Image 1 (cartoon, one colour):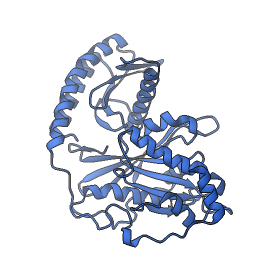
Image 2 (tube, chains in turn blue, red; image 1 turned 180 degrees about the vertical axis):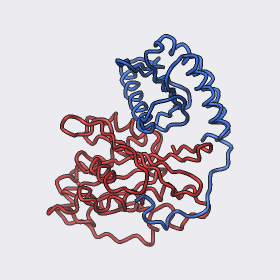
Image 3 (cartoon, rainbow over the protein chains, first blue to last red; image 1 turned 120 degrees about the vertical axis):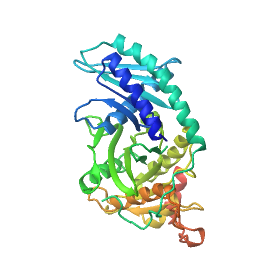
Image 4 (tube, rainbow over the protein chains, first blue to last red; image 1 turned 60 degrees about the vertical axis):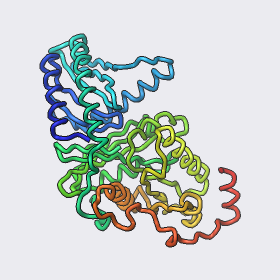
Length: 151
Length: 228
């Protein structure tokens, strides 16, 4: 659960991170593939798909590492011709996904990613604490009568 | 686990289509992608082998306005059905909110179906979940084949619990039962957010409503016994 304040705070950190690292796009995604917050530009890319694939890719590589006996596995980097992806593990089953191009380099992006992950972890921790005591979301209607909600 | 974003007024829910190899999970998503015209849908993504067998997952995202004041984003995933991809199935189940279990109606696929249902329960445990917590519906697919197992046998085999799940007959390749199955799963998930949930909110038939399912034919019992 993210409140408007949480969302704003996370997006602000992502914006700062992008500015410093000169990366193109960055997002907070959970390991189930949900997109929590994002900043930057990916053109017309479908962000749901991007999040699902990033989470899947990280999960598969993480499992591979685990089976190889690699206990420390905090980041994953895919290098392309023009665009590259860095995925960094966060606490609370989340990931920081960053896309960057030729304007910057992996060293710079990784350096600032390591910094922002500390801040994001704190924000996630606060959000999780708020969620634990928040009233459950309850809305009017029983949602059972509409037999074809999705058409 | 459902993700609620109060800033963008969005709820994200993950539904996983689970079942044995070649039972029709991907076909369900392909058909849904064709059939759905009103909900805002994303591209259907398939991570498949050259032979069109699911390697990792298929993914389809649907945005609906089913909850007042919120956009509901249903993220539909399939798992690879082949036995060797069990680790992948565990990964896809991470964060699942609801399950559609697809049963292949072929008699000769009963062992695979039973094994897959047991495997689902094992993999949920791996994810610290269980079918008691996760709403699920069952789809008996391929009802158009000549040697389809009778529904009462399928119900006896896959839906013979104290709380019976909603079950639908389907022919995913032609679209029969596909939207109904998804809508039932969606309603079960959305009921969690209702102030006044329907009496059937769990989506499970009341115990005293349960249909008395006659025992399966003797040869079927043998078959079921073989796969237990």
